[in-house]
Image (cartoon, rainbow, N blue to C red; front, side, top):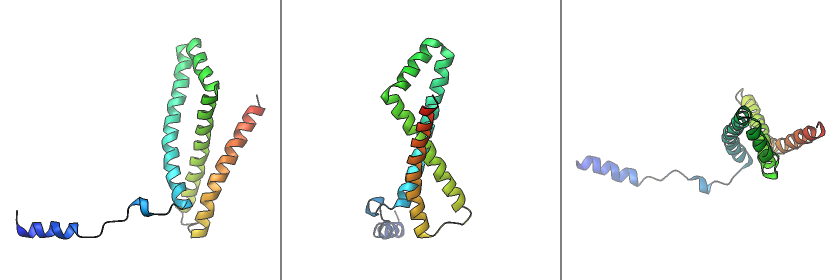
Length: 137
């Protein structure tokens, strides 16, 4: 190995490293952005749930009743509630990204308040949807 290449490796290893995520203080906009990605993954899992529902309906009454019994349990309803919240949160986050892609609403205070608002509104809208859903039965 040439000494020139070895010197370059030594120089590279002595440079300061980029800060890791563990030293950053979590801020609302960062948490909102991470949650937007997480809810996107959760929505993929929710589409598998939708596919399972359609598959159970196609397989016959016994399979459909079994699936509906599970989804009617407290655990199934918790999954559906979480899916509803993920859908609402992701939609609100998508609207935020769409607006900010136009160059509007990029001020620090506004983005921080908007991150808080998205969390609060997503919970309120989810609860409202479930209350309306139960009242319409």
